Every structure is written in structure tokens, then in C-alpha cells.
Image 1: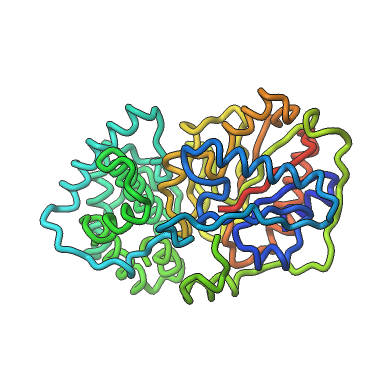
Image 2 (image 1 turned 30 degrees about the horizontal axis):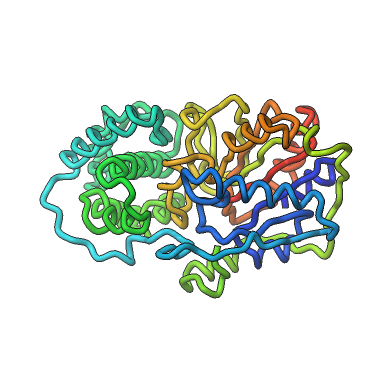
Length: 228
Length: 156
């Protein structure tokens, strides 16, 4: 849809498609359908050769005699990939002995190794510094318990959205920590660990349930982005 | 991505009920020169933005500007969907926002240059009217002003 508007303005577009059935209906001018899971349309992380091959193929559409053109990159999902992320409902939850606050503190130590090693982090959408994530836990736990607690970083952000940003940041901190704890682990196994064996995975289910019970439509809508 | 038929039913239903514009033909712009002399920019629906920018909200039709000097350390992803696993983005932003790969293509003179800015929107919207009628035309104006010739569109 965006491709069509850009093309109408004289901009030449090439698109990557993850859902072939949608692309067939939209008919963007030039599209390449790729066999990768949601979240990685250019190919797998740290695989520059694969990403370059996708770019070669998508820019190659500029020379394709067919128009509009929808080509397949070729290949299939890699072994163990399902195309979509593993959700909480698909993972049996084990009992976790540690408290969420203590678990977050442990994860933050691993996360610090990640940031030191990589020089970057994808944590940050809430605006709360990770050294204050125990405070984020207290904020979320208070919400679940029906008590009011605030964080200055919320600012003008509506509460349902700010809760989601906090949950997103905690989840990403855990993912980065896990990359240090278990380098090379398959993404699906990381998701099974997260939803099945962490206090945060258990807490996010509870948080989702409380949000779903709210009278606030936005709160219920945001619950879908917390856990499924 | 696997065909819709291979997805779990709940996700298949969600995708089948997504707003999708149906067309019989496509508009066609003509590239005025070779790719090796063209200016390229990315427009992504992956909900990416710079650290410190306002994160995307749910069903948010607005856009964010990402300077092409931004690297992986500067970028966050506030896309609300749980359908994809953020681990890949956490490891390597190029899986969805190939800034390093484009820089390599420029160095190899396969593309002329990268535009001064990339742009980002939020995908998986329930209502695409505002993106179709307001955001996309505004992005077109900005990309033309940026001197961009070719736009690479990436989903997530």
C-alpha cells in the first residue's frame, strides 16, 4: 500500500513480502517473497551473506521484465522454525522459586555482559534505565494488586501503553541476558525458556489476565501485546 | 514466511481479517539511471525508531524519521506484535533494517548512495486509512525532497 503511494509520486520501490497471499492482493510494483519467519525479512541474524543475497534478489527486481512482479526468493523455513514466535499458551509453565525482583537483578548482570560485549542494547522503549528495573517490577506488581504506583518516566504516556513498554523492556532484557547465558540457543528454545521457566514469563501471564479484566478498552487491547 | 495455510488457526484468522488493499494493477515509476548511481532509502513497517523518540503505540499510523547515520546502538523497536520473536532484532538490526548491508553495497558501488534519512511506520494496523491517505503521501514528499530514487520497503 505504501509502495503504491510512493510509486505514484515517482519513487521506484522494491518490497520484501512475508505473506504472499496479501502481496498477491495488494500488487505492489515489485516484491520478493521470502521464506523467513516474522521478524527477519532480510534473513537470519549475523548471516550477512544471506542478507546480501536477499538484497541482491530484491534489487534485481528493478531489471525484471515482468510488471508488476512478485518473485520467490526460494528455500524453506529452517529446521525448527515455525514462522511465528512461540506464545505463552503453547508452553507449560514450571514452578519458579525465585521472586521476580530477584530474578530481574540476576538477569541484569547477564544483560550488562551483553551490552559490554556488543556495545548496544534493544532495551529502552519505556525510557526507564535498567538499573531501576526493580522499580519497574514494583510498579507492575502494584498494578496487578490493584494499588496505584507511578514512575516518572510514564510522563504523558497512557497507562496501558506504558505498562506494555515496561513489559517489552523487561522481556528484551531477558532475551539479551539469555544470549549471554546460552549463546547459540535456538530462538524457539529461548522462547520456551522465557515462558516456561522464568518468573517474568509467569508474571506477564498474570499481568495480561488483570489487564483483560479491566473496564478500560485500551487496557484490554494492550493485554494482547503482553502475553498470548 | 510459511503460507497462511500452515499457520496456527488463530494467527491465520488474524491475518486474513487484516485490512488489505486489493488492486488489479500497480503504478509504475521509472528509474532515471542505473542503481549504481541511484540514492536508496528504507521505509519499514517494523516499528523501528531512534532511542529517545516517542515509541509507537497500538494501531499508531504516524511515522518516525531515522537518520541514515544511525547504527544498531541507536535503534529500538516498539512494534506491539508478539507474532514475531524480537531475539533476531536484538542480535542484529539488519534482519529487518539492513543499514550495514546497504553501506556495504555503497562501498562496492552497487548502489550510488544512501539517502539522508530512512522512515519507519507501524505494521499490523487494524485500520490503514490514515497511513494510506496521510502518512504514505507525506513519506513520498519527504523522500522526494531527500533526493531518493529507490525505496526498499521491509515488513516485520
